[in-house]
Image 1 (cartoon, rainbow, N blue to C red):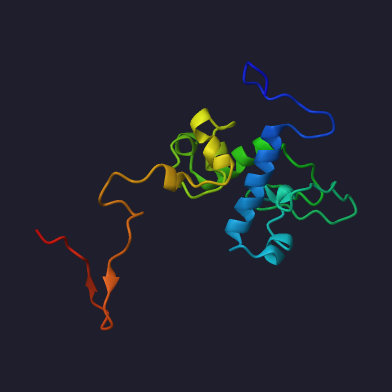
Image 2 (cartoon, rainbow, N blue to C red; image 1 turned 60 degrees about the vertical axis):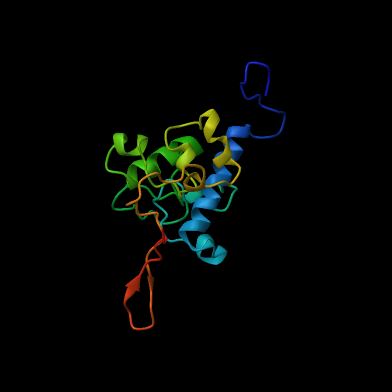
Length: 166
């Protein structure tokens, strides 16, 4: 980075932001497929905007393959040109959320793409690019939040919670 904070492109290497996005996409696919590299490689969701980036390097489209468009996106990235990583992350977030407002206020902090949901990560979000979790950085302040540990259960199926004795 230079003094102004802009990312400079180095000879022969992708921009820092592009590399970080690709790493986030790889982490997303591993997270989606429960850390199973084989299922990531053989993922049948060829119409998903992030599909071309799931293995890190993007293969050129193969025009000899029969095009089978996805019913939701209308794309088949085995044949179609891929979107840029930033555009693909935005499209994936819009597929997950119902509208742009939900993408902006996404509460799903465990998603590896969370820092990129609105484009480039802000200064405070750089922690997430390096592999951190937004849920750990922004702990819940609400006692009734769904991120709270579930109540423990006894051997008979009843539940109990530890209470602090005064």
